[in-house]
Image (tube, rainbow, N blue to C red; front, side, top):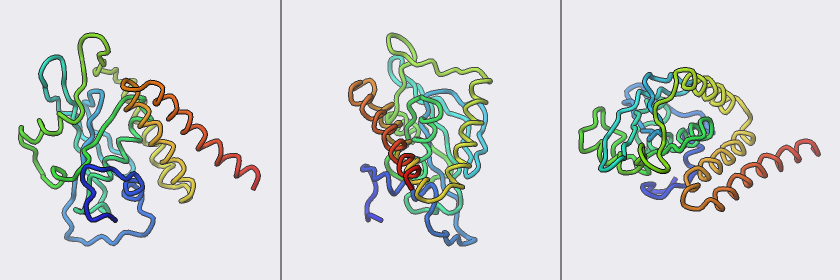
Length: 215
C-alpha cells in the first residue's frame, strides 16, 4: 500500500478494498467509516446492497444550471479508517457500469471519517462532479421508480457475483468494469478515446473467455 493515496487513483487498491484478498482482521471497537458517491441521478431511498448501504442523495445547487447529487456510503467493517475512499471509487465504477450513467467518488478520504458533513463539506464534494440539468447536453436526474428499482436489482446481483466468483475472475471483471467507467467519464471530452476504452473492456473479457475455452 502506498504511503499517500490521495488525489492519484491506483485502481488495483480499490479492487482489493472492495473485496479483500485476505481475510480482514476487524477489531470490535473499530468505528464505522463512510465513503461517498457522486451520482448522476436522484436516489430517493436507501439501497441496501450485499456489502454496503447507499443513502439517498443530497442535492447541492451550484452556479448556473449545475447541481451535484451526493450519497453517503456506509462501508463494510473491513474497510476501516485507513483510506476508506478506495471502497467508494470501486463502487462508483460498478454503479456506472450498471446504470450507464457517469458516477464519481472523491479521490481522497479527507471527508470520509466524518459522521456529519457541513455545508462547506458538501460544497467541496459538489465541485468534484457537477451535473448540467438544463440546456444542451443536460442530464435528466429524475428517474422513474421502475428504473431505479431495476438498477438496484441489477447492482445487487452483480455485487453478489463479484463477491462469490474466484479471485482471478473477480480481477478481470473489475478491470473491465473500470474501463467502461473510464469510457463514460471521458465520453464528452474525447469520444474516440471513450470508444477505444469500451473496445478494450470487451477485449479483456473476450480474451479471458478464450483462454478458458482453450484450457
